[in-house]
Every structure is written in C-alpha cells, then in structure tokens.
Length: 278
Image (cartoon, rainbow, N blue to C red):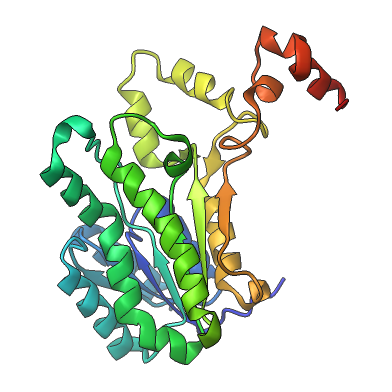
C-alpha cells in the first residue's frame, strides 16, 4: 500500500530511542523528512549522521521540552530547514513516579515532562499544520484508563492527552487538520527490558506479564506501534480524526476472565465466553 507520504515533513519529539525511534524509522522508510527533537545530543547527532549516509533527512534539534521556548525553537528550526510541517508526533515523556506523596511541586514538574509540551508543540506548529492540512498524532498510555498506582503526574498527563486529542480534533476539523492518539500498554522497549533486568528472575517476570496480554500472550513491538502512527499520519487515513487507538493486543479492555490462563475461566460467564455463548 502506498501511504502517499513521500517528501512530507514530520516533527517527532523524543525520537532517538524506544517508541519514538521506531516512529522515526518508519516515517523515513516511507520517504518522510523528519525533525527529531530530543535532549540527548549524542543520540540525536548519531541518528542524523546515520541517515545522512543513506541519503535521508533526520534533522536533530536539541531541546529540553519542559521549557516551552524549546518547543517554539524546534518548530522554527524545522520550518527553516524544510519549509513546511505536515505531521506532528508528540511522543516524549517519562513515567516519573510522581505519586500523591510527592507533593504539588513534583506533580507540576511531571505535567511539564509529559503534557505541557504536547500543547506547546501543537500551538507553535499550528499555522504550518493548517497550511499543509496536516495531522497531529499524540502518543499516550493505557495508564490513563487503568491507573497504575504511585504515578499521579504521569496518569493525569496521559488523561489530558486524550482530552486534548478530542478537543483539537473538534477545533481543527474546519481547517482539515486531523488529530488522533495512539496508546501503548505493554510494549517491548529497551527501557522495559532494563526494568525487568533488575528483577530477580527477568524471564519469569516477562512470562508472567505476557500471560496477561490476550492476543498472542506477547508484548507489543515498537514496530507495531510505529505502523499505527505512520498509517494515521498518512492520507490513507484521511477521514479518521479524534480517535484514541489502543495498540496493545487487547491488554487494556478485554475481560481477564476470558483471556487469562487461570482456573477462573472454568466457571460461570467466563466459561460461557470461552464457548462462544451469550
């Protein structure tokens, strides 16, 4: 399928590793010119140089997105280099564990890390996106739906991202700008692997989590996340806006009684679910 993305211009925040890197790689594979906004100069410059050798453009823009001025500068540098913006992917963020005990100051800092720059990037890129009739894709998290415990700032931010996705979809529909969100649950990233490596039995911990994922009892891959983002960024999804897309193998919403490997599936409604009866 031709996604009709050749020579489009995208900004991706946090595009040097994890899901953000997967998104950058998939966009460039479709012929998109990418501006990668990231704090780490070493990672960003290395990625820029790697793609330059292949004749592809992956402009690195260094910036700490907790400073909204960095958001403005990132948009200006992208326009100075490429002259347009067709796609904005708000991705950067961190589950920083700012819970109820952390206090209001920590909560506000968490919002800066995970939510405020989504608004700032969209604000500063707005005129360019209207001009190109482009799109915004916000990367969220299942935590806004399920809760997690001990991470109030991150959960509130991700809930806010869902709200802004719907709000912007309404506000920008008349300008032909589409806005959608993509939410991961258990996605296998280098960070996730690092976290499990600190546990007494990493393989057992991974297996236990995988059993909770209904479709295939496996983690979602970075590539599967990126594929959804790139499709939503393309004209092939030209009538899709205001949607909250879960790429999670059914982890967030499917009934655990019908999917988990447990004796409870032998009883009652869960057993009926297994046999296909109502």
